[in-house]
Image (cartoon, rainbow, N blue to C red; front, side, top):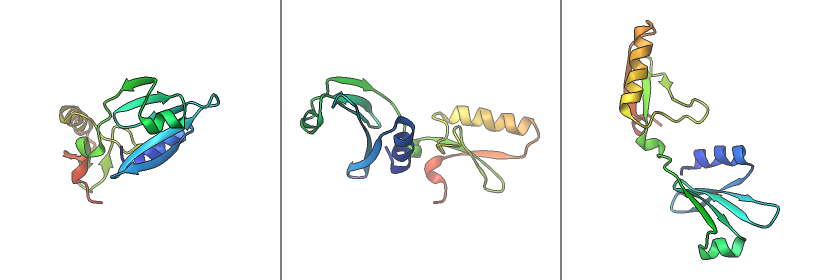
Length: 124
């Protein structure tokens, strides 16, 4: 996951975001019993302890599909304002069709003209 997502997730779960290398961020939660829960873009894993984590021996794993923001779609109005599916996390829609549906709904209410673009195409 990206740094921003990791930082926000860390706040939500009471953990710590850290870069594991290569621009990949993880969120870790140290539990009272000494176990470690690690959130990545692909999975949530529980490890008995830090040594088990270092060895890659997860005791439990839940696989996820959290798309990177580059793979999401957002709505943009003529003034350049961006509309996200989740404004707090600044994450768009997974499917272009869903974003288009929302854009058409905004237009049908007379709220202006809108286009849908990949979130990765937004200016930095």
